[in-house]
Length: 113
Image (cartoon, rainbow, N blue to C red; front, side, top):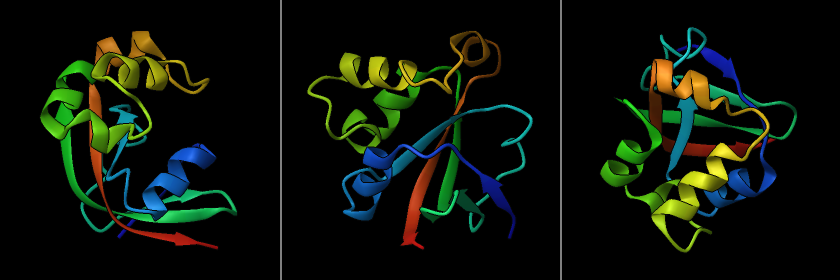
């Protein structure tokens, strides 16, 4: 099992803790290309998640449709809003998304430090 560093978004982490957000989304870049079930994402000193299923999609729209946008961004009121909230984060690069695609990481377990 490998450990990967991830950008902390407190609201997203707390939604994962409560079981509302069951899919964590990342761009399919070189850093995450080897991630697999059982690996862990570390959110600094805040906490971590254990990854369940890993799926790859060409873009956020495909991911949101297949995984269910409420599982990705539970606080959004529409699929379009969920996608725009992800793309609005400082760490998200739309050009990289178009080039590499995205990954849906099913949250198996959440732990706060």
